[in-house]
Length: 353
Image (cartoon, rainbow, N blue to C red):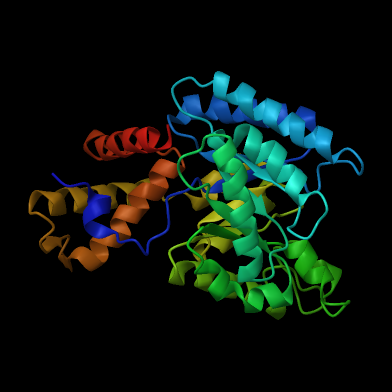
């Protein structure tokens, strides 16, 4: 039987990525984050969040080379520690116009490019920036022996970048666009208040937050729409209130349910599980989707009647993606459905090895 993803989803559908992208820039936090990724992978049976080792904001001025070499060391150590589920480790390098960009790429991609799941390029303004980054990354990835193109993720952080988001998302090397909230607000010369960099569950006209200020919300929607138009993954920005679990979960729920985001950043380990919970489907949604997909597969994806409603491939696509999201968030599923993901994961491992 053909795999549901092959039958239902075309090339325009985004790659299934973990719903959480966790950033850390200090060595102690990097080590703890990598250990937590392994621990939770063993708990859930899948890698439920990426760890992005940060060079842009993590490296001390004058110590960029040492910091990049530390990223290589940690990434190599994580590969050795592989148990049942392979780690997902990425690196955020300096912007393409920064003096340390080439050095970052040479050290990190040239040193451990074959083990990275992606590279994050910050402050991308245009397709030309993506072209340049891809050319340099490909050069150093080849030196490391990587056979497949290394996926690129980019940060949209300015009004001009938002304007070009659709064409940036169309670039064949782009896998995901992230929204850089802090830099976006700062790029407006004081026209957007500081409150728009935070999250307030009951924001008012006197204190508009990141989910209520019109310019910020518009930018988020432009990025999400650009991604969905070209089969890329929209990744929501950070919530700095990391000590408030309910705040991060509410923000993540708004990002996923109202703004169309399928992935979100975390900057503290305490944010990871609330993000997983907010982005995961409910058990009712999982069981409904499983029943529909199993019945549809038994009739070779012809239309079916389920609970008094007609379903065909148009709705099958939606319900299959509910199950993919359940898998990416480590939720339990019926054994007949879980077999589809065991098969898909084994194929992915072969392609990346």
